[in-house]
Length: 216
Image (cartoon, rainbow, N blue to C red; front, side, top):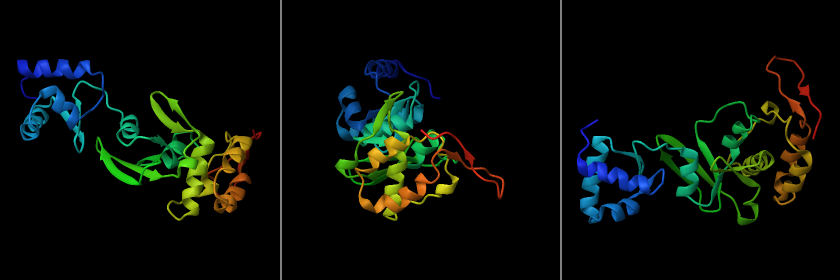
């Protein structure tokens, strides 16, 4: 990394005082008090020197700051919460680890890359924007809601799912049914198929039956 000059040290202190893990161009424009053209020249210099890291278009972070893609994604495209494949994997309902961070949003569907990670926001109607909680600074769907969000997208042909490969041992049937009542009727066939597997875990051995647990 290039040698840090005094002016750069002062900049680091100013940005650290903001207590943010990332900065937009608008943030940096205020801190540096430069015209937009001069600002981009300065930002390119700071990125080359390693003081700033370009995480996405017009989004930067200090080299000393921790950067959580999931947290930043929900802030950059607010309101949004982690759901679908990513949340199902987080809860170990889905065994595979998805390459894309997936979020639900009430805004238009959008894709972007943040910190080199693919991020996908899928639109949900306002009446379906519920059933999420704050965990470690990140908004994430409850496992039952993440499952219903996924089934809803599958019912519209926008996602796929192999129900037989999912682990349903910890899905709360009552909560699932309660939340499902708020979804359109088109998810009912998928929901019926899902409920047949509640309280069970798949087995990878060919021909083996699923493990049955006490349903919630």
